[in-house]
Structures are given as structure tokens and as C-alpha cells.
Image (cartoon, rainbow, N blue to C red; front, side, top):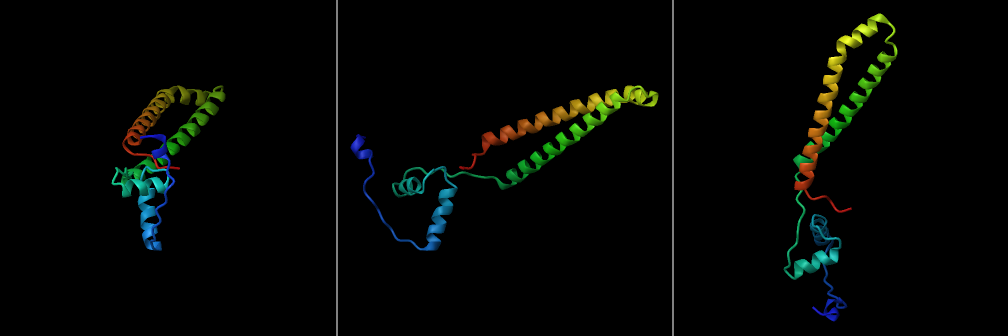
Length: 136
């Protein structure tokens, strides 16, 4: 196509009511187009129009997973701070004994939270690859 044919200087005006405009805009927002003009042009010329598909149940699951991940991080941080404070007080025999006894539990907790966090990240990344991101 020559450069002259690529320039869009012609206008096509149509009249529609508010309801029709609302419907067209809703379809446009669900598409991958960055302008309403490009969306309308492709529709009128019967060219492919790509519509983003959003799985609302997956969106809800993702939101829940993000909240759980944030909560898990907060619990882990609080737990680490508490154990750190106990290590500072290791001159008290009862605390030193408790720390020694529960060190395996502490390490298991850290390993398990890391595994959960990693698995949540994997699921999140898989979900992102399957779902198109909304245009901003």
C-alpha cells in the first residue's frame, strides 16, 4: 500500500442514539484496540477484532491469593521479629531452652512459607500468561 493510501483523510459520519453508543463503547473497551476509531474501522471493514476474555472467577481467585500472600508475608515478618527478640534474650535460661527446642519448628515454618509463596507466584504467573491484561 502506498503512503498516500495509508493517510486517512476521509470522514464517515453516522448517527446513533445514546444506548447504541454505550453498547459500542462497551464492546470497544473489551477489545484490544487503543482507539475507538480503529475498533470501528476494523468492524466496518470486517477485519478481525480481538476481544479480551476475562474469567471473573479466576480474577476473584487471584484477588484472594494476593490477599493470602500478603497475609502470609505479614505473619512471617511478625514471627521472624518475635524469634529475633527471643534470640536477644537468650541469656535467660528458659528462653534459651525454648529457642533450642523450637528451632526446628522455626526452620520448618520458614521453609513452608517460602514454598507456599513460590507456588503462589507460579500460579499467578501461569494465570497472567493465559489472561490478557486490561488496557490502561
